[in-house]
Image 1 (cartoon, rainbow, N blue to C red):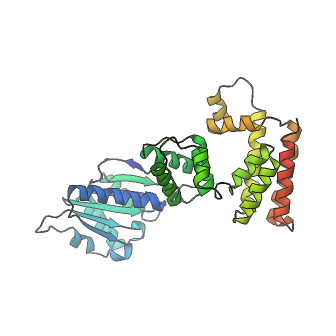
Image 2 (image 1 turned 135 degrees about the horizontal axis):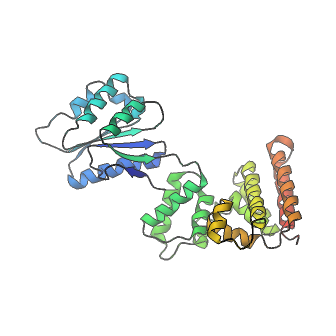
Image 3 (image 1 turned 90 degrees about the vertical axis):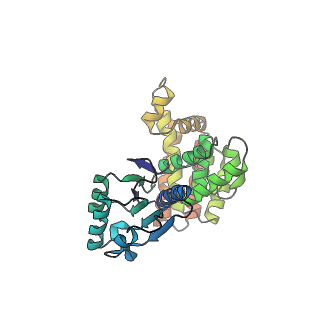
Length: 328
């Protein structure tokens, strides 16, 4: 998911609001304005200020007419933390901005400093939404967007594998997408991701779960031991195992004849995930799902303090799940 722009789309609009808590997207919103200004005038003067650097009267000095009529970009970070008198100055400025000056207000959103946001919006400021990406689906959409902006084709499985391998750090995800887009000439698929991120991808808790629900006991145990050795938290592994088994159960109990798109919507899964789970569920029975869920619950209790050896508890769960996958 890329930053979303509302209002005027011109990055050289007199006032831009970058609103949210996702640091990468906030930095990109600022960089876009600076790049546009320097494309228009290479000698653009850029002032990047923290809230403590903007005192009452400072903005008036920075935006006063210049003998050289130079273009300026003034970036105010953490605008929600500005003092009351400074906020009055900023509100007055956004109501009547100066020519050849672009003001960028970086604001975390929320209730703090909301009056400044409201004033800038009322004045017609361009707004770039930079929300924190806390959901896996958001990070998956972000990865797809990165490849799309790079003009590259990546399979859904490759995008998911990259999210599983890298995790929640958006900067690392962006860097990985950039590297793959630059280095790989063809379609980026799951094999490409695995080749670049061997170890990280294979240590993923979701890889452990995938191997287990596919009945691949040895591969699942190998992935589990590698994951634990590289610092993956046991609770993340039990969570992934639970998701994997539940997905099998949900799809197995879904009514037959349902169109793939409708089925994906009903189960809350992307279509590619439905296809993967459909392949994984071969060999499963209703009793197998029940047995596997019981094993996951026992492992979850053990890794959360109910057992002495989380690794052993996870191994038992993986073996049980893999055996359940061959129960039909």
